[in-house]
Amino acid sequence: MDVSTFQDKLKEQGIELTKEQLDQFEKYWEILVEWNEKMNLTAITDKEEVYEKHFYDSLTAAFYHDFREPLRICDVGAGAGFPSIPLKIAFPQLKVTIVDSLKKRISFLNHLASELGLSDVAFYHDRAENFGKNGKFREKYDLVLGRAVARMSVLSELCLPLVKKGGILMAMKGPNLEEEMETAASAISILGGDVQETHTFYLPGDQAERNIVLIDKRRKTPSKYPRKAGTPSKSPLS
Image (cartoon, rainbow, N blue to C red; front, side, top):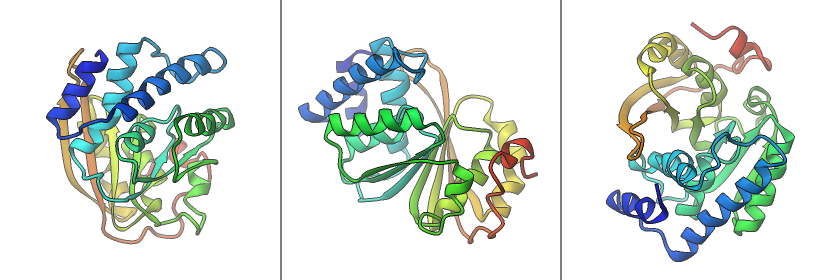
C-alpha cells in the first residue's frame, strides 16, 4: 500500500489526514526501520507493507468506533506502538497510555513520541496483570485495545480490569476467531463484559482477514482478577 492509497482508503472511511499527519507517519516508518536494526520490533519493514499491515491495520479500529472524542485509551502490549500510536496521530485529542512488559520497547516508544511531537501519551514498563491491579489505572479507561496480544480468554483477563464500567474493550484479531470466542465466552462474562459485536473485513492489498471484537464493560471486574503475572496465559479462565 503506497502512501496515496493509504490516504485514499482512509478518506473513504471519513478519515482525512493533513500533510503534518502524513509527515508523522513517514517519520514513524523511518524511526521504526532505524530502531529495528538494533532491536526486534517488527518482522515487517518494507514501507508499503508497514503502511498496510501496521498503519492502516491499526486505523481500522476507527472504522468501528468513534475516536473523535478525547477518549482515555489504554493499549496493552502495544509493542512498536500499534494500534494506539497511529490512532493518536490521526486523532490527536486522544489521551493514550501504553503498557508493555519489555523495557527496550518502552525506550523506543518514548523516543518515537518525542520525535513525532506527541502529547498526552504515557508509557509504562509493567506486566498487564500488575498494571490492572493498580488502583491508579484499574477501571479508568474509556477504551482498552489489544492487538495480536493473546487468545481472547487471556486478553479479556489482561484488559477488562482496566476498562471503566460503561467502557469498551476492543480486540483486534486475525483469522480463526470463532473458536477463540467460544472458549472465551465464560471468561468475558466473569470479568464483567458482554460481547457487543464482531466485524470481519479484509486488508485492501493482500486480502488478509481481520476481525474486530467490541466488548461492553457492564459490571465491575471482581477484585481477584487479573490473577498474578503469568497465570492467565498458563491457566486461561474457562
